Amino acid sequence: MTELASHLSRGRGPLFENMPAITGFAFGDWQITMVSDGKLELGSPSNWFVGLSGEDLEAVMRHHFLKTGEVSLSQNIMLARRNGRTVMFDTGTGADPMLGPAAGKLMDNLRIAGTDPGSIDDIVLSHGHPDHIFGLVDQAGALNFPNAQVHVSEIDYRYFSDLANVSDPSIGAFIEKSKRIFGALAERLSMLVDGKEAVAGITALAAPGHTMGHMVFALTSGNRTLINAADIAHHFAVFMRHPEASFVSDMDRALMAATRTRLFDRMSTDGIPFVGYHFPFPGLGHVAKAAQGFRYEPASLDGIGF
Image 1: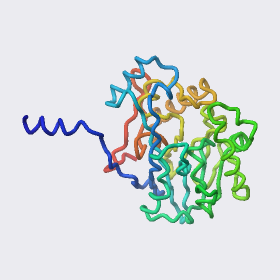
Image 2: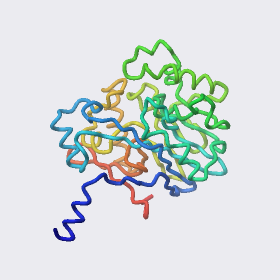
Image 3: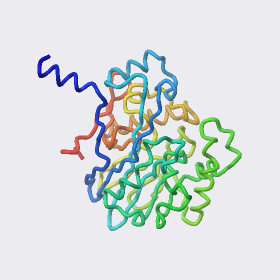
């Protein structure tokens, strides 16, 4: 066997086992830190991505050199600091066992990053799903971020606090815990309003469909904008090439597809960078129009084009 062949043979094992969990960059006068909460290991893509034929789904995965029989989604938590104030976007799974052992790494990674959870001033929640809000508390129910004001859309706050929704097949198993979490935060909750600032320099924008109160956030510095795109697309390949497709837990699939296409159009036309919550860590890049759908262009962290 030649030396090259030997290296190629050894390269057939698992890729990128020790990917970084923390990275940072400047965006204008904001200091951004991306912290991983780990990943959701979901199994077969066909169980999660809806509205595509098996052949189309397999073609997308193969085109991007991905396994066709299993899929995992990153959990990218963004911290934005300016003028002594720290804002966190979503909180991960909180190591809830129902969401798998590969997720729930946020608290450990914050410690590695030298960030005291007590120093978080604000948490803006994109929506009420468990992989975004369960990290608000530890497994005993105590607040992980005891000094943070928590901002959430009123639509999702009401939905995920209502025990009548335990019958929802996509999310009902988590409603009781969601209600407890929001109850523990009752004195720290603020309701987000579409088009209004959650905190100075961060504007909430309604992006309904995945949940009806789902929000994305526009972070501004001067005349520049960075979008925290939350869950408008769960997969960097599938939903770029097929923005019409759906994720299994989208509450209104047609509305989510329309929202996704609208936001992708805006970001591609205006060249607005974004962070995708479930995109490969750190989830930072641009969206561009393609012959079919869109394409994702990850940012190069050694020379971010902002």
